[in-house]
Amino acid sequence: MRKRSASFSLLFALCAAHAQANDYVCELALQSPAASPTMGNYGYIAFYTSSQPNCGGATTQWFLCSKGATNKYCGVGAQYSEASLIGIYETMRSAEAEQHPIVPSWSACINAGGSCVGSILLYPAF
Image (cartoon, rainbow, N blue to C red; front, side, top):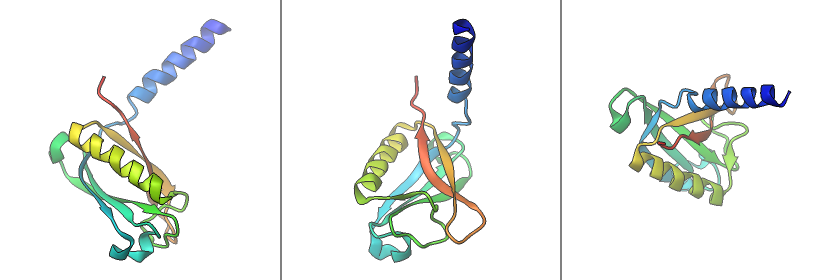
C-alpha cells in the first residue's frame, strides 16, 4: 500500500510540474484606489501575460483586486488586503524580471458569468 501511495504522489508531482505553466508576466502595474474605486479599497494589480517569454506572443490583460471590489473584472473570492496585494505585486515583479512561468487560477467574476483571475501560481525554473 505504501508503494502505491508513493507512486500516486510521484505521478501527481509530475503532473503538477507540467500543469500548463506557459504564461509569462510581461507588463505589471500596482494601481491606487483612485485609478478605479470599483477595483477595491486598496487598489488593484493590472497585468498582461503572454504565452512566450519577453512578451513574444499575443498578450492578455488580467486584474487582481483588493477588498471591497465591485467591478465585474474582479473575482468574487479573490479580493486581497493591502498587504497581500503588495506582496503579490512584488512576487509577480520578480516573476516578470526573471521570466518565470505562471499559471493563473480562476474565480467567478463579480456580477458576471465569466471567470476572473483569482490568484497566480508561480513555477520557478529548476
